[in-house]
Amino acid sequence: MLKQKTKFKQTEIGRIPEDWEIKTLSGAIEINPKRELKKGMKAKYVSMQDLKEFNKKIQDYIYRSFNGGSKFQNGDTIMARITPCLENGKTAFIDILEDSEIGSGSTEFIVLSGKKGHSVDGFVYYLSTSGKMRSDAIASMTGTSGRQRVQTDLLEIKEVLLPPISEQMDIAKILSDLDAKIELNNKINKVLEEIGQALFNNLFIDNASKNWKIARLREYVDVIKGCSYKSEDLQDSDTALVTLKSVNRGGGLNQEGYKEYVGEFKKEQLLQDGDIVVAQTDLTQKAEVVGRPGIVNFIDRYKKLIASLDLQIIRPKKELTRSFVYYLIKTDDFHNHALSYTNGTTVLHLNKDAVPEFEFIVPDRDTLNKFDLIAKNMLLRININNKEIDKLSKIRDSLLPKLMSGEIRTI
Image (cartoon, rainbow, N blue to C red; front, side):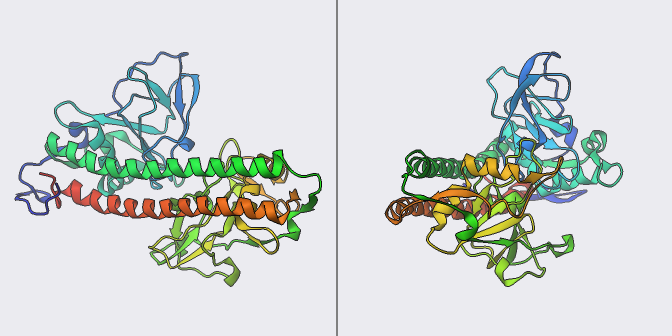
């Protein structure tokens, strides 16, 4: 049960709950704890790209021989120590290993874990995502612009507020229950996306009629370039840019990639609920984002959404439905086509002709309508789940600083 009234004591850093302690970070938690993993051993490896910004879950991993880097076990937290990954919220909780398994990761992770008698693992994760600890970590960075890293010795001496163990466990449970519901909605959305794609492939690829004609997408959709913007235009606003970070690997929308925006835009770059956007650039190692689509969902906190320069807006103009075009662009056929229109090495760029030049089989109206009836309902369910994710995220983000400061108590 949450309580808002508590007794405080006066300390050198101000008033804090009377049963809380002030400790240095190294006194409160384990920083880069010792984990045994011999060189040459095969282990699960997590790269920086396997962390999604402001997301608790590890998104992916590979197996590879250990040859140095961070080491961790289930219950540990990994936090980026480089710019801009730290500022962008790349911090995750390890739960991908077996009980006795040790994993490895980028050298640019700091590993954090609970310290016996002082802190518990779940609390450590939420402490690491709190505004104060993130600010302390950023303040402890040194190095030239664009190459700054957290200096562990400077971070260790930062002070943190530490509740009693029982309250740490309560705090971690409240916040992790919210994250678990968010993750469940994400999993449901992934399954719905997969069902929609399987149905599309069955109707329009595996069992396409020989009587259906072949056409290019340019005849059936309008392609609109997103707006360019300056970093100074990313300010608090009820208007947001839908950015490259709004497209998941393999397609689908990630609304955590929205960025509040006060700059200019053209009328045609103003997004409608249900608009299709396609990623124009890609920084992933396996080209998992470029050419991938997402369907835009409006959420309560924004009145307007604008497509950024890293996206194209795809709007059907005749005969085809949004759901058909969306799942068409999610096919492997389209992605392979898009890769043939992609150039660049570190940063991939999609040629403006990739979407218009794609050839596909145009179905008959009856089959299209049958698919659309089912697909629209699934996409609506995904939209509803995304709105709930946004509300739960706001609740979690509102509770986090209040729980960590003792403004709201659990006992």
